[in-house]
Length: 480
Image (cartoon, rainbow, N blue to C red; front, side):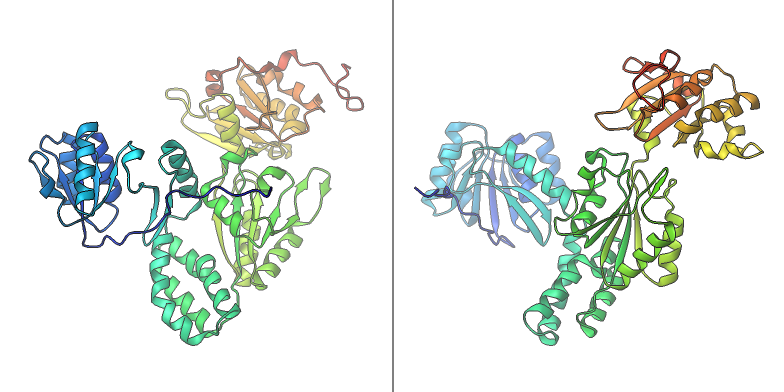
């Protein structure tokens, strides 16, 4: 037999409540929860609570609800559009339900689905946009979990954007032909320049962008987002980054960005690998710049997905300059940089009261010149130093810092694949650091953190650098 999908026993609708009375009977937590929910509407709330809790009284005063401080009586329900029985007392709730039905009013009894004429949903509010999630009373916790996920997906500025859209509806119908032209306009309105302007708090700019789209219909305005993918774990991606990935036409990603993060983008988005790793450059920086500009001129929405944070050793400066020179709009979305992820993996305080109050982000390659860079002097004075891409120059880093006066006993923490389940952690002192250079089995990105604050880390799940075997570069895993 063919599969028959289950049918809803309660059909979701939106009830007009502007100016209507809604009655809540109850004086404790259940009544307060319903008051907070209904307070998001334009209904006139009437709360029957002879002995209201202090929290409920505070909410009533702050939100201008009507408070009836008398024992419940059926006539208190008259004229209501909806009634909520939220007393927590089954006998009283049943009485309220019976009285409401006798008056022809739909009623909800909190946590008593068998008594309900309707169910209240978990609500994602972006007024005038609302998303309601219901489980017909079977799983309130599930509804809340779904609400939280949907809430993360929707921009906080969506309500403002939707309100602005109302003002353009008549003009769009008058000036644009039905079908593809209107669909294109509204897609660009909700995902293009107007949406970006509203998200940035520039409503007048959004209005100007939408007006320009009406004058020149069909012309898409390209945009590039330089997005930090974080250190690798998908759940460290920011909400803004995830939304942009879902809206992107094209995703340009670095080699160090895991496939699982790239896969969080829109399913039909074009994906282009442009990353550079040691000894393997798929595209030069000038080629990447030209590609970003070209895609922007084609009207594409582009996400340039960079490992960690775009502004930390990500060459974002060159890309932003190219986009500025070409007149292509862009934005920067921060990401969790690898130093923070490595510190979290070690439960390591990057600053520590009474020990260090400053830190340095650098690459070990800075030490290969003839003179010590300025950050080396900061390290000697007590700053915490986070060294990116430092495995192959570990001996240089250690030797130059010790030569400059940093104690060989200074604590060191090393993380490969920070934030990922396959991460590896090592600890030791500055004198032990050169052992890292012979570890040819460390194929993932390596972060090294040096400084007195490192001594406060949790080393219980890490290996000692001094105890590491030397691995052959020819046959990794075999002790030399």
